[in-house]
Image (cartoon, rainbow, N blue to C red; front, side, top):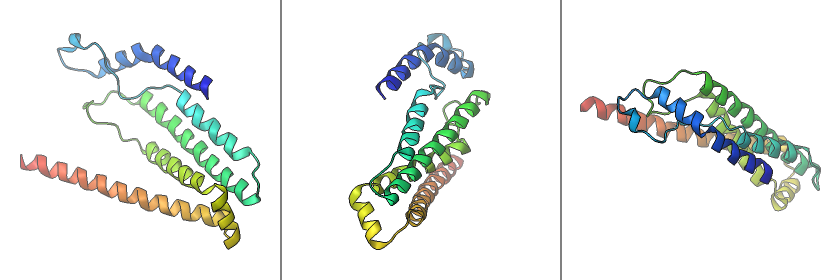
Length: 180
């Protein structure tokens, strides 16, 4: 983790000029000569993805005290791996999509919904993987698939609530700009 973090920091310092050039391609203002520092809004640094990916691999492959605990660790490790795969697709899309006409608004990539869902589910399942909760699951006879379904359902409801709030915010913004 320390090595991957150091590699990420070094990569970010090397990507500084690339980010500036990419942002300046999008800039259409005539006063761009005054801009000293700029960013396109993302960095193609692969080391954050790599860190989460290897965490998912390591957690999904190591043995635990019980069979249920091992299965739950495998589930949250796999959710991290799935999130990393879709984050990689996001990086590719960001590199391939031409400059946006309105650089102040963020791009809303569909792959980032899957990344968010996977990492939220992985985090919730990770919280379930501690010994007292595993012992409570085993005592009540819960299986790993039952707990996975409950976790996915809870996160889906949470994300639906958040998406509804953002849709309502966007509607309010559109309504406010039409009145002006």
